[in-house]
Length: 280
Figure (tube, rainbow, N blue to C red):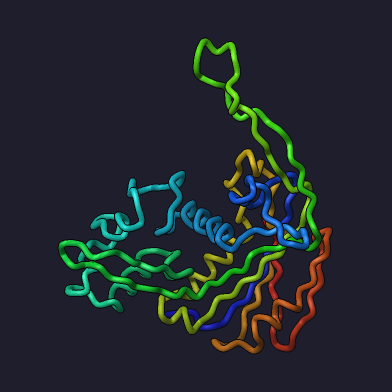
C-alpha cells in the first residue's frame, strides 16, 4: 500500500567550525547566498539521506565511490547488471514496457521510489535505448542559515612532495581550508501521496525516512566536517489527516520560526499537531 497521508517536515541543523557544503566553483568555500546566509544544497542533503539509508542496509541506486558496495563502475552498469540491477531486458522497450521498468526500479531501490530518477541510455546494438523518468514523492529544499554566517579561511599544508630526495617541498603543498564558525540552518521537505502511488512509496518507507533524519550526519565525519561539528538538533514532522492534506506545505512550513541560537517556536494549525523529534 502506498502512502495514505501527506507529510511535511523540517530540519533544524547546527554547524560549529565545519564546512557543511563546499562550493567547487568558489574554491570549496562554504556555500552562501547574496545576503551572506549559509546554504546546504538539496542535493547534498539527499546524499546524506542516501548514505544513511545505505548504512541501514537499504538498496540504493545512486551510490558514492566511497560507499560503493557492488563494484559497478557507473549507474548504467548498475541498472543493467543482472545481479545488482534489473538486467538489460528491463531497459529494452521490445521486451519490457516503461511502466514495468518503473515498477521494477522502484521495488529494487529505495532512493528511486523516494526521490525519483531518470534512466536515460543511448541505443546500442540491441536497440535497448530508452528514457524513463520517475518522479519521486519526497522533495527537499536547500537548507539556509537563520542569520548570515562568518566564514574563516586558513592556509594549510596539503601534502608533502614525493619527488627528489624529500628535502624540498613542492610548490603545490599549500592550500586553503574554510569553515563556518557557527550557524543554525533550516531545511524543509514534504512527501506527496499522489506521487507515492506511482512509485509504491509506503507508510513504512516514510517511517524509515523519519528515523533517518535525526541522525543525518552520523558516520559522515571528514576533515571538513569533524565528528560532532554537524548536528540535526530537531526534526519537526507534520502528518496530515488525508492524502490531499489539510493545508498547503507553504502554510505548514511558515508555522515554524527558528532563532539564531537554535531555539524555535511553532504556531499550531487546527487539526494538525506536529511531532518534535530530538536529533542524535
